[in-house]
Image (cartoon, rainbow, N blue to C red; front, top):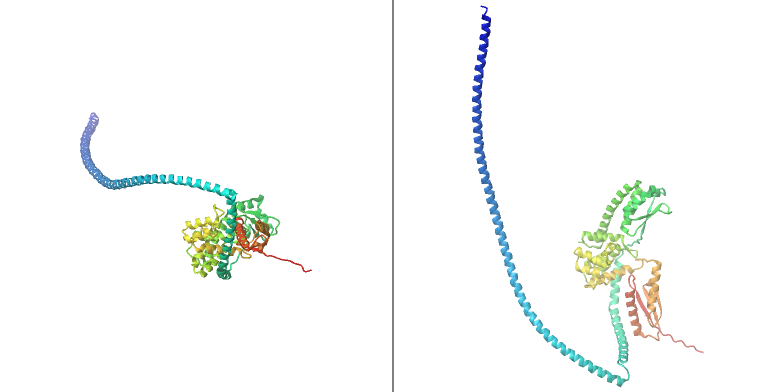
Length: 522
């Protein structure tokens, strides 16, 4: 009974050992089976993947083959098209080569004919030279005999003959010119006067005198300091932004804007007026206001051009041409506003065209655009007629209008009657009293030059410039000049004035010849 506990323990230990051994064996066998199943499953997956990969690879090969076939077909089509084009080009080249060969053959034939003609011409030239030599010898012999007979040299005889012929020709030409002029004046003077007077009567336009300065009124002299700014920064900013000089002097409650460009000067005047009214004057604000004034000026220019087109009844002008017309509002010539002058010329030319049974619309269009080049003549080279013609060609204007613009100062030949109408209307508008002004010094100098030019002719006793230089009266010595010579003298003076002097409008030349006989009764 004492050994029973130990036995029980031993039996328990053996039981545990055998049970553990059995459990280990069972678990190992079960693990081996799962591992075998997993391996078998993995083999199946790998086999399926390889099968699917083979299918995908086959499909990819088929797709690649299809793409290659499509690309090959497209390439073959393009190559076929290129071959067709190349064949056409080759055919054209061959045709041209045939034409060239044919032309070369024709040129060769012509060259042969020309060479034959040159030989004939050379032979004829040699014959002509021989004849000329013989003729010169005969003339020389005859001249020698004539010199012996007359007792004077050939040069002396030639000079006498030239003087006689010249004097006779001048007298005959003067008589003929006087007769033609009298006939033309009798037939045309009354009608021309009626047309011009009617045009002037029906056309009236306001004119303004432009200068190089503009005055801006201030509410008080205190504003001058604010315009100048600290250390002059405001006035410098304003001048930089506008390109116009600001003159702050002793003039009460006013500053002066000075500049050659009238458009910039007007922008500066508008901007300074806004700054004074607003009261905020500093560099940043100045830049903003000047930019706004430039936009306002663009609107004003466009509206001025449109208004001129409307007032004259001219439609269909290019928008850029209208802007250029608007710029003429701020351009002056001899103190006459160019836009107003252009409108006046348009109306005058239209009226005269109506009287002469021509197209008034064409005449008015040419008159309105005749000074269009003055809008940008400060920005580009050339006369205002050349600039205007280039601009109108650029904007596809009618050739008649372009010729009228280009020839209204006689720079190029006048191809139609319309340039003559524009030229006449331009002279009327510029020469009427009050239309233009000029400085006193240049005015007096022009009168002196006019009198000196007339005094320079032979037989002139005294010349006087009258009617503000629009007429020159020439008194001639009656014993040295007859009536025909007086008529010819008037024409010569007028021609010289046209060639050597610059003047607005026209100048009338009047030659006066009279004989006074005085006797005393004693």
